[in-house]
Length: 480
Figure (cartoon, rainbow, N blue to C red):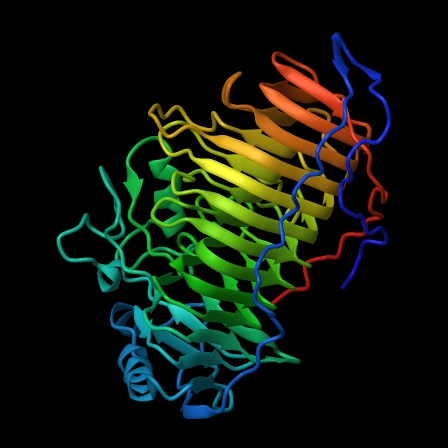
């Protein structure tokens, strides 16, 4: 769906003589400016994926009652071994292990699973794969106890681990919705009166929650997620940790805006496309990270975010982030139930000197925001960490952005780290209904914007440009 009527073009050099631009108390001299270098994103030619032929079809034998099962099934999930055996048998075939309904039986219950190389796990429309609520099923040997708050984390395996190239996790779409994975982060753990999300909230006061992520790949190339629905993850929903080639298409994530630490998609690595997706969760909708791998060549497009902490880069950027294209996306400050995000951001780059690094050539095109408290949040002092990893945000371009229905306290943050490490930013065709900004240590080129940033070590320069502010509409979350 294209909900933007305006299409902006590249920023062009100034061709006129220098003029004076008054911005509050700041007077900056407009001078010929070099054209910004725009991000191109994922260089792959990415098209809508398709579901491969079946290797094995497994039929359901369970029906959930209020998303729960018998005590014996919950303690020892009955589908773990047969799903894993089918996956083991189909590795390398390029085909799918399909989870299908059997009459009224439409549920599978499993503990941690591993998807290997050159195979796809497919969940049929109307079928739900439920994640175990027994923390012991996820325990990592030698690590803190899974299902507790401890002095450190890392105690839990992901629900699904992807460990081979050319793998996928997909759903089929039909009248009963997309295939669904339910992490059940909102339900009490087996033998406890506490949920995964309760642990996350407890850890906010100190310690680390030991909660499983829903899906994680490690150093895997060509991983695809397609037409899949995810809900109620105990922790992050999808982590692409290194590797080259990650495609997300037609994903729906529905987790409440107040479910702490439930990031939607956290990619690091190279050549990533996230397209045609609807993401609602209690933390970042997308969080591009670069703590162990440089992250580059990513496109986030034609997607919609509800109640999240924004489309984010960081906080770990120490290995460098570059060539990130974010275009034709909408963001809403509330989730589909009307709950407001606990950190209501739009376009966000966050880091600090303990985990910072170079973030360069990031382009945001045709972005629509509603009810967002911080439409732009470029913050090199996100946390109190202190070290030598200096956040450096350069060649950041916002070309076409509109914010409406903003809260009364709305403010954008446009900050560089220091007078020698400045934010380098272009604002073109930007119109917000709340224009308050905090700016410091920044060089900002402007064309057709109602923002007037000013502050210490801030230089604002008029540039030439073209195009117009986008026209916006905001689709409702489509359901699961």
